[in-house]
Image (cartoon, rainbow, N blue to C red; front, top):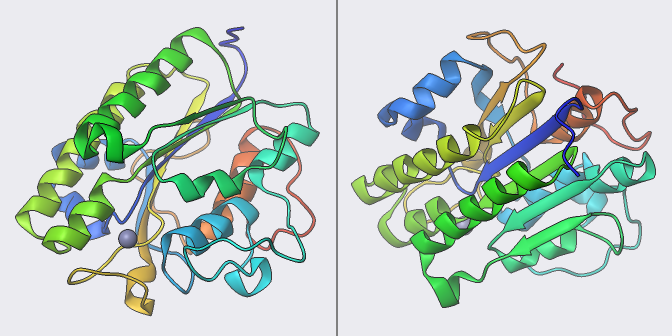
Length: 258
Ligand SMILES: [Zn+2]
């Protein structure tokens, strides 16, 4: 089913992308000019991938969702995710990722389509390209109100070569080329959010300083070239539901940026 008349949101998360790296990437600067954005957005503590993603999807702090490491243990209280709320409203979600722990963001039946590619089999860069191709194929032939795309490469290069090293900024540039391939397959009813879960320093992240993230939103209602004020990773879930015309979950703590 393809329905170009319905609003949709594509959330592209580039793991470990530091806002300062965007100064080196022409396509990122183009996107920023076309978006409402901030380079002073903030994530949560600990600034590690799984805790940050749970705060992104459940709009609460780690002390509430209780995922405080990259290992997953089922929480006693399970706050609703973006996909849960969309599903309750009859809307489809799709997810494309290569970091396996992100499977814990979904629950049985709450998403329509899931694509996981194991980078251990395909290599880092080819995995990014395969994810891009999978998303593009989906956008051209299917429809979901919410598409989540996670690129892992930048974080991996940060750990191996250091945040803001030349290898790191090259990886950021490589990923933005892929982002633009996805953008070519979006229409005027699509809002595109590009964000990171955390930044990083030296060869790691997890500290307060690493909660600094870029937040960029391109679409209807987001003034081009404007600044988003006080943008938290917890604000993304209520922003997505607002764009799609449905209510945020009562238990979410974030606010809509729209
Ligand atoms: Zn990492």
